[in-house]
Amino acid sequence: MGFSSPRQRPEAWLERRGGGRPGRATILPVKELVLDNCRSIEGKIEGLTDEFEELEFLSTINVGLTSVANLPKLNKLKKLELSDNRISGGLEVLAEKCPNLTHLNLSGNKIKDLSTIEPLKKLENLKSLDLFNCEVTNLNDYRENVFKLLPQLTYLDGYDRDDKEAPDSDAEGYVEGLDDDEEDEDEEEYDEDAQVVEDEEDEEEEEEGEEEDVSGEEEEDEEGYNDGEVDDEEDEEDVGEEERGQKRKREPEDEGEDDD
Image (cartoon, rainbow, N blue to C red; front, side, top):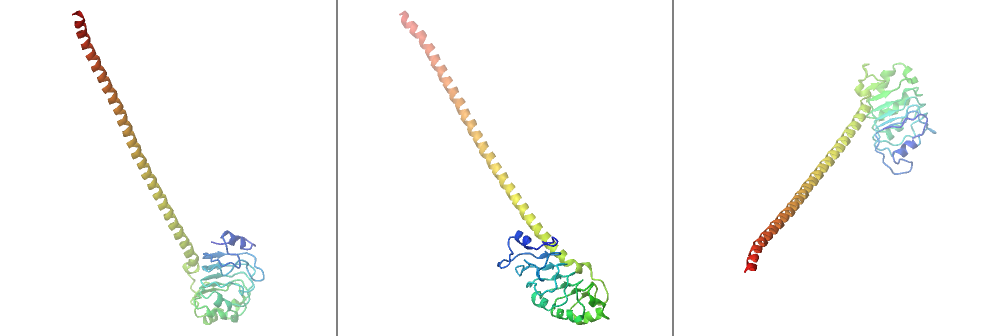
């Protein structure tokens, strides 16, 4: 589920979802939203509101953000992609607006010193932080100091404290998990549709069977009716022959009486 058309605003996408216009009390059941390369206005992406209560993954890469102050409150958000923007501070609002973040990507922003990322210590569930291509990475003992400042971190720029690379399952597993959930939902919908088709086929077969039974009964009735007509005709023929025989018998008798 996403919207990634370059340099456009997401209102059209929201309208296609059947709602989501600012000011409306609508809850959109979207878990993943990609707004990469969309146009932000004064640090805000129009249409991105707290109506996305179920959102767990949000990507706003290269949208021209200078701060995260205008992000909506997204309590269920776990992964936030903010790379290639112009953010230089104000990260303290993330703990308030996205308290359950586990992955945060700030690569390619204007972060220069450790004090800028210090507010992230309030994100107790944060496990992965990316600061590639930020000036802060040029500081002496950068990695050691970041892990000391943010003890809840497991991975910094894709590596743990012992310089072991994060497994793909951790770096990409979250999105794959969302895809698996969608596939499971699709499979469930497919199974339900297949069951409906089977039920309809069974009903059609039953109806055809009932029609055949009715047709067979009608044929039997017609055959019985025809047999009855044949029997009646045979009875009439027998009666006619008997009458003719009696007439022939009477004729000689009548002739004898005439001779007398």
